[in-house]
Image 1 (cartoon, rainbow, N blue to C red):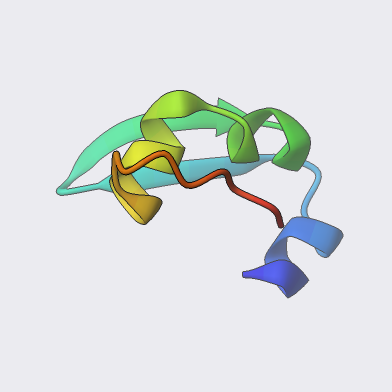
Image 2 (cartoon, rainbow, N blue to C red):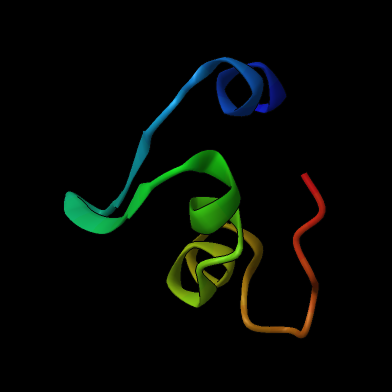
Length: 48
């Protein structure tokens, strides 16, 4: 995932067949829906 975030200009994130977020890697990695879907709702903060 780190490689994709470094190389991509824009990222599209899917979960369970639905689009969760689209935008720059920085925008997407801070999106609450993305964090919740991939890290859970237990208060963990994404650091990519």
